[in-house]
Length: 526
Image (cartoon, rainbow, N blue to C red):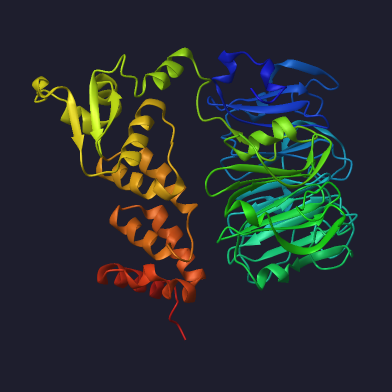
């Protein structure tokens, strides 16, 4: 509801939406994907593929050609033009095409979505990205294809000649894992944590230390010398990168303070560490249509700076939002989404609100849970419905004569309260530093969904000091995703991790497991 355009939708339709993207020169268009795998256009439908050229509709219009294709990602350019990634790994394109940005082999606009072929034929694409008038597709085999406008070398093909169909960008012996596009630039992240950029360098957004456009991929060596990068993002003319230790690096245009540097410094030609005072960074967002930077720190707090509704802000401002994407609806100019927006579930109803209010409400509760001498008021029926552990414990053998009270000694009060609150609201109210304790509880109670969400939260806290301990915890609680994350971090920071106190405290079995896993990964090959 924070997005003005989406506020026009009825609750009954919002309940069906699983994800969407808001775009256009004024945030005036949207594409909405439903849980039934149907794609709808809303707002300015001229280039939304809705077959309503030159019109505007504030009622969702079905795009029949794209329904039932298992869409995984949508990306939009300035024209606008649209790329849609299907579950099959195929890419569909429609919209403006004056520079060949649709990749269809011609420069005619395409109203119905059309399959992009050429060099992409037979490829399984895993991610797409749009610049203003150019496009990029990253395959599952780690290869990159680009097409469209190339006036600044943004295609990375060694020239400034436009391409009307996909062309492979040459990379030697490097597997690419992520791609992002600025207005007239492109950036990729390799599996080893290196960043390459190319295209317009008018504001230093390539990070090469000068203002010369790059027509071929340029290794951002300032980053390569100091950090292993895990995330990248592009604004209109500035670039962002986050290291695996949570450091934020920013470079490029600073005309609106979006690089977080002294506002008198209009261009930042090489990556600099930014926002040091807000803690480690876990998520970043930027849009090639905006001059705003938005980040989340490892405590889940959301910060923004740059062009904030026409105001130049060069230092991080803490917001009250829960997700970085939400900031763009209220403070970005224009109000467009930096990526696809995911909807976790149906719009809240009075029932949901009532359950939230009922948690720890002594006036309606019929049971007490006592932890560390502190009482939490709960409802037996709800706990039995939500949790297999309570269905068993509060079953037929439950003794009503015990005063309807349960004593908990295995977990701390904050951890157990967070667990019970999750039972009521499906929300995690726990500090990242305590998430490991909640993960242990979830594993003990066989709550797999909670376990997965805790693991994702724990990953955000990874550091040199605790990586070994997280690896041990992942083994102990049978959490493969956390195990892989912690192991990869240990391999990228082998010296620092092995000298940490947490490493010296590993038991023999965990140490053996870590060494064997390292050997299988080729760590000890000569």
